Image: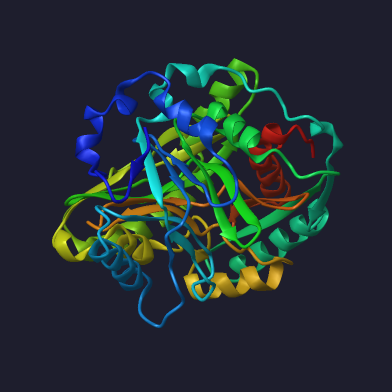
Length: 406
């Protein structure tokens, strides 16, 4: 069932529709995704498919949240009930956003609750035909990590997140719907997305990290920092998970991020709950240290999900500390423009509710090319070999989805 923005779109009313309670409703949205103007977002709470575009967010001097609210208010005055924006925001604050109001929106329960999500998806035809180029090469990336570590040991800054890319090229345009289905089925409890990121480009990925969600007067954030690659051997996998929970280097890296999240969100909250110690969250490729932060907003009428996301972005988990200096180090050492990588992807409604996810474990598709991204948090205790290996492990999420190898 397709729900038009001119018709009933109140999320509380959706469970009364057949689509939300029928087994297979979420996977039906996944199967229906088509590149171009479709916007697909799946989270542990719901699955959304936006089709078509009735309005796009235009550039402007006003704060992003205010411009989004003005756009949604205009659509509501035009007769649309509960309009929402969907799309991606870049890492750089001055880069253009890619947000639009879909013409129709369909909602379903989360993919993880759909019994059909376990069905396998074969690799796309021609999956073995990819050519892969590393930018920068692993040795150059390791040298950048070593240089950053030396500067941190001299006291210049505390942390920086350095990334690298893989450029995959095929003889023909990739099958993006098949890739999306494979990503979703590999980690159905995560955040899977495919949205236009620029004319002719599609951002596609499966992120484990929620930046922030707002539902009424409640906020939730789930910072991740500190990682270890999974192992196919069960005993070794358990050993790696236990070691991560005790790693002084990773616990310090995680604490820096959690402290930054607490500091950013506290001014908006009358109550903020931050657990003292992290727990573990797993994806198909990685173990991560995770802290779930919850809070009660002091002024929900004037605090939207994007207000909260803008206050948080960029966290030390994707940039570093101090933020301004870390940005400059990233510009110095990364030989590419991040674009939407380490930005955010998600949605927001006219009521201010929404969900924004950190844009990691992703790729941008354009024509016959896929550009994959992966980064690692570099601190004074880091080693070039370990951080290079971590980025390689993170690339596996997407390489497995396309049938390519590094």
